[in-house]
Image: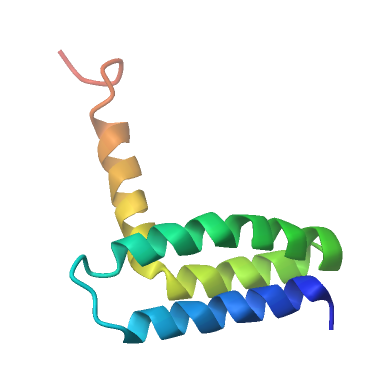
Length: 89
């Protein structure tokens, strides 16, 4: 098994362990750390095993960190509607 997939597995295991621990900020600090560590791992997986495995690992990461993705999607939609150049007069 390639090193990149082992790192991706360890990342997913750490994410699940962090999700089981109590948190005052609803795990947002842990999510930021997981995102910061996960992006280079995802790039390494894609580089070492190809784009198909990279996309599969991306989908797995999105399923684990779904709320940051939901909030990002809502922010992007809201900011697209309130662009100064797109507003009607």
